[in-house]
Structure formats: C-alpha cells, structure tokens
Image (cartoon, rainbow, N blue to C red):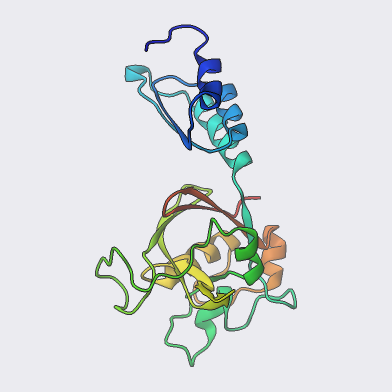
Length: 230
C-alpha cells in the first residue's frame, strides 16, 4: 500500500497494529525532529539517509543528527585512574611502563570494571571461546573478534576486548585497547594529553586536560564510539 499523507504518524504508530521488533528507515531526506522521536519507540531503530545527489548533506543537519544520536546513547564512562584516584604505575594508561612486561613503553589499555558490565551489558558481550573472524593479526589464542573504535575527533582504530573476569559464572573482558598494537591507543592518548611518547601518564596530566574518563557507546555491532572530548 502506498501512503502519501500523514506519513510520519503512520510510521510511528504502525507497531500498534502489527507486531514489530525493529524499525528500519531508508530515506534520502530526513529532519532532526522525527529522529528524536525514535527513542520513544519500544524497539530498536535504524536510519539510513543521505541520497541528496549533487547538493550533498549540509553540515548543520549532519551535526544536528550526530548530537541527537549522542544524546540518546547509553554511554558508559570508563575510568582512566585506579582505586586511589591516581593513574597506575604499570597498568591502564601506563601498562607498558613495567619493564618486566612484554610490552612497549606506550602500550595502554582502558580497564572495564564488573560494575561497568553490570550497568551496561549491551556494550560488553561475554568472551568468545574463539574469534569468529580471525584476520591473521595478533595471537592465535585470543578469544574475541576485533572491534572498530571511532573517537570523538573522528580518529579511528581497530580495538580488542581482552582479559578475563567472571560475573555470575560467565566470563567477560577486563580491558580494551587498540589492536594489534596496544601502543597505538597509548600514543594517541598521550598526544591528546600532551605527554611525550614513552613517558608515564600521571593524574596531573588528566587534571590539566580536564577529564579522567572515556565515554563508550555502541554505534552498531562491533563499532564503538570512544568520547574523550571536554
């Protein structure tokens, strides 16, 4: 059936007439107000837009839609400091600072606590027995598929959930870092914090920067947004 009038209301109330578990919208033109309404539907929604031809998508509209997406995400804040409020000497951002580790000085990871997983189970899936899409990088015995990380400044890198911690008999990851080289994330964060390569990160660096957490949200399966913006 072809609808030409009152299309928005038909779309937003269609699930009341027919059993639905997802809404997928494919459109060349879209405005921010209907997108805002999607968060109130009782199931997941996906919008694919952008067939504007030679005119392109205006940056104001694009960033408005990004702001809406960011506002409705379930964002988990991962701490960059230890229990005492200081950056660990040889773990976390300073993982590679321990000379006894088989690491380089810039190697870094972000810890994931048990409470992070309990609060945001949709972000941290249980560990896989084996990777489903092993791509030839890293060690053969790693358990998880790599993920895609997109930072708030549009820098992207491959990442990996790793380490083990058990919650209610189920094994979950304990850390996340860049992959296959943990130094990629370490160098990236040191650059943003204005810490020279190879040098330890301290709490005063985070205080000077103005933030000691990284917000993580899920953009799509296997694709994560990492937010270290002020």
